[in-house]
Image 1: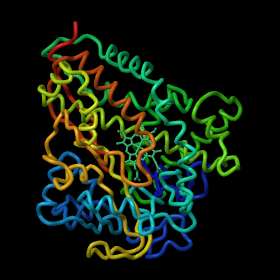
Image 2: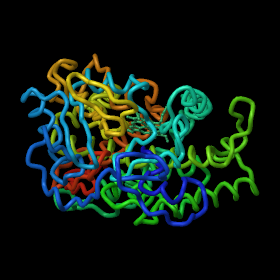
Image 3: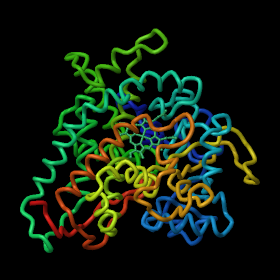
Image 4: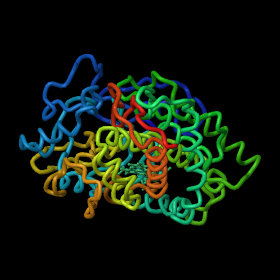
Amino acid sequence: MTDIVDDNQTATTPAASPRAEYVPPIFGDSPEGTHVWQRVPYNADDYGPVADFATDFDHADPAYNPNAPEVWKQLREGGCPVAHSDRYGGMWIPITHDTVNEVAYDTENFTSRSVVVSVGRPGDLSLPAPIGGAPPITSDPPFHGMARRLLLPAFAPKKIEPWEPEIRLLCLKLLDEIGDITPGETVIDAAVQYAQNIPVNVIGRMLGFPAADEALFRRFVHDALERIAEEPGTSEGMDDLGEYILGQIQDHRDNPRDDLTSYLLNVELEGQPVNDEIAGGMIILLLIAGIDTTWSAIGSSLWHLAQHPEDHQRLLDDPEVITFALEEFLRTYAPVTMARLVAKDNDFHGCPMQKDDWVLLPFPAANRDPLQFEDADTFVVDRRENRHAAFGLGIHRCLGSNLARLELKVAIEEFVTRFPRFELAGDTRWSVGQIRGPRQLPIRILEVAG
Ligand code: HEM
């Protein structure tokens, strides 16, 4: 999920508009008269590796995602509830459950206009709040509520539950495609051969997009979420995404069918048809929001099970425990950190926040706060009390959570059933940036179901 409209790129190309003329980024301290602007020229190499996360936080430091729980623990224990960084033109990072919760609920002082931290900030000429480029995630009240209500029916339990058999077949097919396995010897990559293929296939089918484009969707996710330190306007990734979506909108107008895209093209917002810009932004959000989020959640859960055979065994002995295990996977390995921009100068617990500073919202850190959860750093497979923040807090709480839970549940159930024993077989490579999860996950299969 993302500010799907990466504001690095909205400078030149709004989400669903054709390629526009390149407008150079503008440096300075004001968004006036700009599509995208930078407070200071930025070169990630000037900063180098993070020495102190309290004062120089960088979630895109390659050392961050592999060690994030340790970073949060050190910050909390060092008495730092809100970290800071000069990177990306200035950024604050609340770490505790209370501070993350407070920002998430305060839509007056913090805007969702851009939810992916990047070098560029949206100027006053780019799509403004309260709509933003990818509603409802980039929207503020009052528009946010209208856009959200429009999407909710499509993700209600009775719409999502019928997908279970399809998702199960998909998981079984992926497991079959792994091929011959010699127990005790064969090493598979559970992120590449399994986890990454599940959400992309499901959302592509829901939207009515060609299955052959799955690899392209993963590239779009990468462009939107991971190229955050590049100078605005220097990559064409988001142009390609905008053009792709426009093509799909046209195809669905010419050949209407029973899918999410056709639904969005025909639905009404406050009695009016939704225009292509808003529909396109919503479609982009749906395409991006569910892919690396769910892929990360599946991967992290398998990473855990590969190191904790006792939890794996419990799932096999007591299949009902999956209900609790799912929530605990989501709490302990929450994949999604979102961002806000400071809407007006304010003093946040002694932190002098200035308009247009970034604020990261590490929901995963909130989930490890010992003031909120007993034994917060321990995975308890049947934890009963578990009001975690993996799906966010406040008005933007994940709209796809029914789908995400279903995909995660089926993916884990089928994997642990097919492979009753497996272990880690080498180094895991973690993603870089706001979505945290394994991108390479070598697992040695020790037993295959007969
Ligand atoms: C394990 C998987 C997932 C996790 C952990 C997750 C997490 C989140 C979080 C933390 C937010 C809040 C964003 C914010 O506060 O700015 C969010 C919003 C959202 N998510 Fe998810 N998500 C997941 C999967 C999905 C899926 C599968 C979809 C649908 C295809 C989806 C669609 C959305 C949408 C549309 C929003 C925006 C809601 C709004 O702004 O009102 N997510 N998600």
